[in-house]
Amino acid sequence: MPAHAHSMHAPSSLNRTALMATLHCLTGCAIGEVLGMIIGTALGWGNAATIALAVTLAFLFGYSLTMLPLLRAGLALGIALPLAFASDSLSIAVMELADNGIMMAVPGAMDAGLSNPLFWGALGFALVVAFAFAYPLNRYLIARGQGHAVVHAYHAHGTDGHHKTSSQGSPRAFVLIGLAAVVVTLALTVGAAVLLEDGQEHSPTPTPTPAHTGMG
Image 1 (cartoon, rainbow, N blue to C red):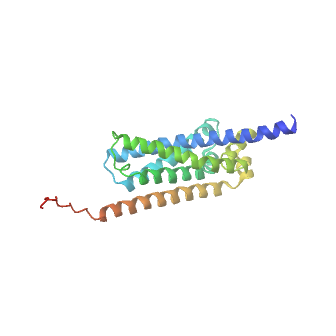
Image 2: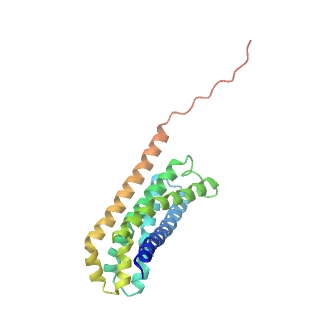
């Protein structure tokens, strides 16, 4: 292949890989977010508890979508889990921070019922914004052999999982990074929800303005 053709193909391939990786993470996040919001709303939970559940489920489903093909291929859980953490942790964290930030920023979105178009409109917009934030991050990581590139490297070189994880970094480091991403994301989103609820509870109730009698 001519050099100029290869140089044109490389960015296109990188963009496509980043796009697919971001859509992959978005799918897991969307499933977890929607399920968490539905459960929390149906049970009458507060915003903080609902967001905590939604974020936890988003990470769970995001990691699961990456791990399932690896486990079906015969990879051990002890290898598949670090690969999933290495692949998705930062992407999911960015998506969840953007997603929940939008939901809390839209007035009334978190308190709207499941039958309210405001809830679904805000959630749909939040997921679009989350995708916009995560795509450049995934592209940056993949271009440097990190993020989803770790799983792609495994697929490209066969089933020697130990060699692949050790060549990209320590499996223990991947797990620690993943756990840190979950904890930090939960702390930031739940903390913001608590502050928002506290602010709403202590906001002064507007005093009704007396009707003007129109004297004179």
